[in-house]
Image: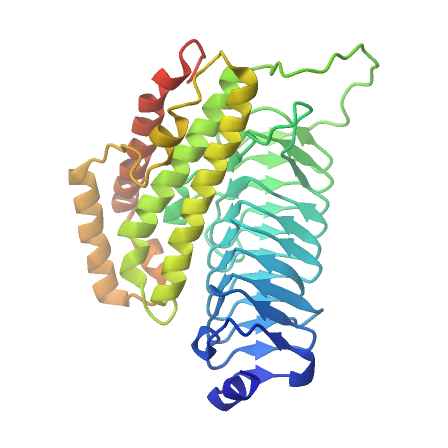
Amino acid sequence: MIGSLIAKGVELLNPESIYIGPELAPDQIEQGVTIHPGTRIRGRETLICRGAEIGKEAPATVENCFVGPEVSLKGGYFKGSVFLKKSSVGSCAHVRDGTILEEEASAAHSAGLKQTILFPFVTLGSLINFCDCLMAGGTSRKNHSEVGSSYVHFNYTPQQDKATPSLIGDVAKGVMLNQPPVFLGGQGGLVGPCRLAYGTVTAAGTINRKDEHRPGRLIFGGAARSGNLPYKGGNEVRNIGRLVTNNLYYIASLHALRHWYVNVRYLFMSENMPEPLFKGLLKTMDGCIRERIRRLEELAVRQTPKFNIKPLEKELGTAEAGAVENPEKKGKFLEQLNRQIAIYGNDDYIRVIQSLGADHAELGSDWLQEIIDSLVEQWRDLFEGLDIR
């Protein structure tokens, strides 16, 4: 394998120190990839595309990941994740299943990610734990949503559940790459499940526990008020209606994002999005949806008989999930999108999306938002007695 890779133009720096699993075929690592000493690459599904660089700052392990063109994974452990063109992660990373970094998204050193979706340009600082959330916002590498260093998304409760996914920005508007950024200040945290609107700024050191649906708000606060109160454990969950609502919107948003991938990303298959990378993206998205349903079901088991868990997987988990689409809006949006692709080509996803006029971008957002709203509306009956808004 090592000899085959060198012969095809893969740059292996000190080949004797690099491990390539025997289950990989040579075509799973493309010409022009650079692999630094101490790297371990394994997993039957692993794909590493042209121009990617692995292990520049520290030893790296890549296992069953789909690594797009010109991606930089500088060191650490990477498993079951997708990295699209020019995304990057610093050394000492711990990136696990269900993570998707879209174009030019990045994380600095010592980032812990799992079931994390970052839209293009989103930037994470150092020493961050940012699992079980989706973040969007921003228009470029200079105007991007950012998470400050030493930030935590709190995704585990005293009741031992992880039905805690947070939407920072949203899918319907976020895919258009035209929204104001979100800024989460360093040494702070977000208690999931939570939803934050575009333009939200949280001051450094702030722990945010509440949704903010109004755009352009500054949230600030210090440590929680001190106290020492009797505490009795158990399965009872406060604000169960809000918790379930946020989970449903998150799952519906993932379904809408899958619709976007199938109908829009599909049109951009090229050297920058080869078919195996696209398939890996869809497979990972399906895994993200299953994970969120599983976590909601675990919560439901402990909350029975408040709601019935039996239909959750069937109703929430199918590929189409009973989504109601507006064919007229979808058709008009895709028609205009194809016009832009004819002008700019299908190898520059960001340029084409950002070339859409405001009216057409709004049309596409409306198409996706109606999918989300229709799903949440359909799922209300599964949670009779809860205030699902």
